[in-house]
Image (cartoon, rainbow, N blue to C red; front, side):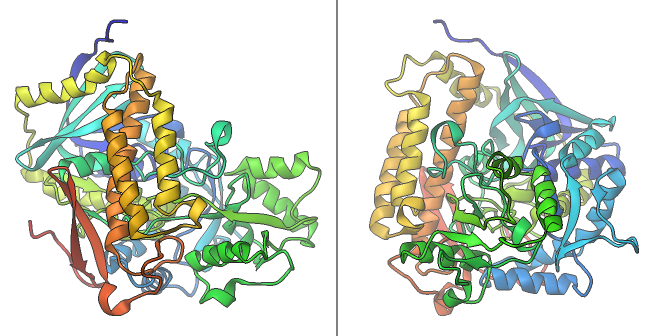
Length: 565
């Protein structure tokens, strides 16, 4: 078969936003409502149902409720994250959480209220919503703006860089034989985090049943890694504690009806393993199962019919498989406890701290490039509203920075090299390896040697050494893959992007020689937390094929951190 020929289409804009999810949409809206700047959103899927909110959500988990303050929110995040956060970033988000929540309501989101007209809390920092249509609301708001153009079904492959400055991005359409060469005065990465690095709970035809969006492949991280952007805290992985099989959220139950975790003997067990926190609840469950005290459950048996119905409705808003599981078995949480398990690990800046190293304005270490939402590191527990807040912060920064910016073009020969690399997978001779085989090999390596489910999330230096070598081997194999159509071309780049993220992740896991977050970063060689030597960020830069580790000092709440480069 002759190679599929792709025509080149050039687009120029003031601001390019890569990723049309929560943060990307809100960043575009903020720019649009405060200027006449032209904004292009490049979205791999369709903006109406893309990103982590594609299926909806039933609560806003970052909100300053009654009795709480932005300062207390920072204290909570710092405590839950064992002290390793960018306090300046978290604080700037916390001060905007309620503002962006009100904006969401103005756009049409239904937020539940009590008889006094106050938002109904689900916890100290969480409020209840009817959020099945939250993403269509954001997408419609963006689509209605005259100065926002949405390029759906466009997969970004690499940044366009000149003299260390990001001047746009290169990608290809999944709906036409086109390569997009997009030039912009400012570029924002809002492409989300990385799922699918490790073997999932549910393999084969059910592998999409995972905690994080299976379509978020770490592409935003990968294009930054290859361009030399500084990354942070990849070793602070996120592993969700979820309802078994459906991988539905457990917080809906734990916070919604204030239930506890129990083992097979009905014993509450979490506090035996330390002060309850997000990662300790997971670690305690893993340990109970290893000791033979499992399976473990959320204790729901005996809840009222009203509470059960509330859970049925809540899961229909975001994880309908859980409600359907109960109904098809003619049961419910009031009649039986809900079994729980940990997922495979993810890299995601919205729940933990992995992502681009950014300054106070969300500028990355590459000039003219910003990162927000799950793509930006340093500030855990953003959730939906935190991602909106970061989109707003970056947008307002861009409005100031862009006053002295201009569109810069690349050398034609360098563009031709990038286009040639993109197209070569369509022209490769038949590979010895199917695309899915490389993906499964990657997941097996990471599961067994880099702290996946198979090893109860623990890893050692010896195992990481094996993982690093295997990932490098798979990167070589990935270069030989053959695509016969655009969908296969997308699958190849998704694997390559994941492999680059794995490469950086392995180095970060190896570099932090302690265990700070149980399960998230379970270093068997160094099983204890070491505050004396490891109150620092583990950062990295990819250079000349190697991941170079950089250690940085903690940044305080009132600091205004800006890059020195």
